[in-house]
Image 1 (spheres, rainbow, N blue to C red):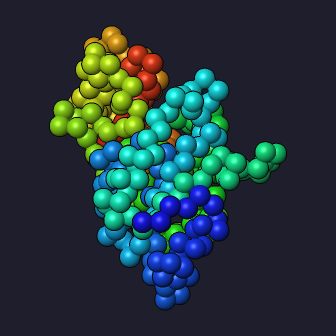
Image 2 (cartoon, rainbow, N blue to C red):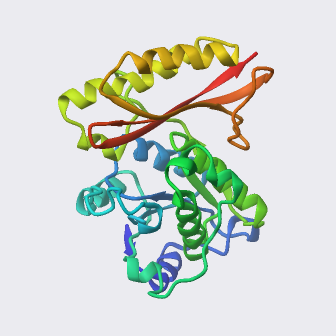
Image 3 (cartoon, rainbow, N blue to C red):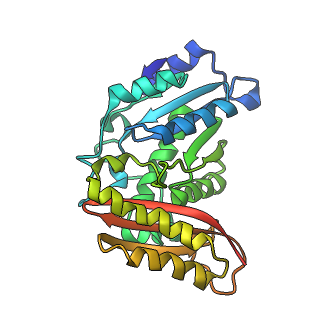
Length: 284
């Protein structure tokens, strides 16, 4: 496994591993799994999915300051680099790209990616600029690593939808793959932020997955929302940011006459920790 921290290191890694100019040009395909580190079983599942899609796998580890607001947890976000390298080695990763902030961003950086109207709703409403920061770093990673395939988790459903839209809008030569959400046996979606939770907080956090399960058992939009909100309302330790039922392609909330696949998404604070989760539901 090769660890690179800049573009020159990535080029050397590609040469050493025999990664060509892309599968479409006869080279060996490369799949990228972008992460912020603190790797867990959910990340492992994405790496395994990447290995199914390409001959070589790269994992990026970079805590991106652009996607954190001024009052968010950038400074205390878990950083477990040595343990992350062990995970990558065990999963057969060929390249780990671990740049510094200085490697990724000029001090006077002026140009970035705007998430547009789709980036201003749901997560974008509660975390202004967050999706701009996500898209900017993902585009930079694509330019630096030059993957043929990139794998993202569906737990960050709006992020995945926005990345697909960016790829389409900017004609990027990358195939985007979404990996399923991995959960604990009790239903809690795996997240690097789960390690912040106290035992009591963790118990309260289970209301998120229970709410989604309750909502996914219904079919009409008002019944889906109502069932999920009833579960959330019964947990006093939660501070709910949103519970929404949205179109998967646009993240616009669906009306009562909507029919088809939709995403039921929730975000809430448990203690000092903000968690998100979602499920896909069949609305009739």
